Image (cartoon, rainbow, N blue to C red; front, side, top):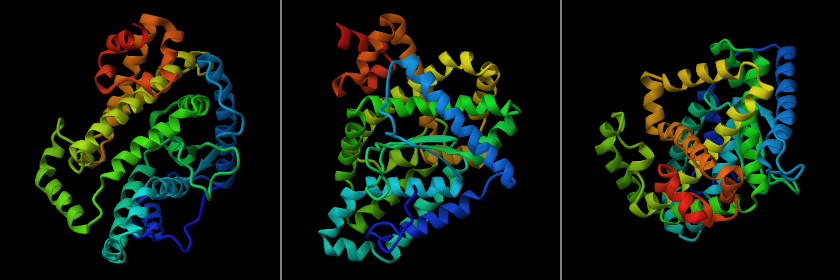
Length: 361
């Protein structure tokens, strides 16, 4: 179920209705499918997700409670709406602080909230054309049903677009995508503290976000001075530039956790892929080549939004997982799920032996 923006669509910080409308326009509909084709794609993605759930649980030993994260097959507008819901939920601490400071609210209401809505919408619209699937652990109260901890989103038009561009077998590619996303579902479903840990870290970042428009503009002007650095291959992302040193420390910890989760999903996908995806080697080779070959405006947007760092997370996290499993086996690696204290620290992602020494002695 996706929540429609209603009377409270402006919360003093972002005009969410405008964000969703902008994101939908920027994203576009994706490849055109007739009704019968669309129904077939949705049915096959749902079936692949159900099969992947069993395969991933058997391979990893991680069991998520039944019904804790339903599968939603969506189009690009549905993905935009779902992520607007999630962002709004995550920004609750900031909007609550704004509500207690009338001067900040009056400054950011109106023009400021509409500007923020346009910016958030443009970002969501760009990403909506790229994402194949996503596990969303941050469901708002108005969206979450009893017993649900998250939801698994599969973006049907993007899956179809990429499988056509790669020239791969649709059934194999859809199963391959679902293996990755189902791994995320069991990571959060079987490790109940993970969601709250990540939410607490995100709240720490937001707690130091400036509320005054002048402070926000000052940070953005600083970004403007350094924007040419963003365009360099080794330069910072736009998100790096607006972070304070305190925020960057927390973000580094979050990045290490994301590297673990993304890398683990990639390892699982490659380990079990040959059992259920006959053409997995072809898919992996062609997909990696496509992922690494973005040029021009697309690559600039990836740099600005920090997506280059996300691509590194897949590689660095997978290397960490494989190295740990080689040293202490899968059972030894599974100590990572015991509690937040066992999560890899930022430096340990590149030094798996250090994690093994710290956790296993």
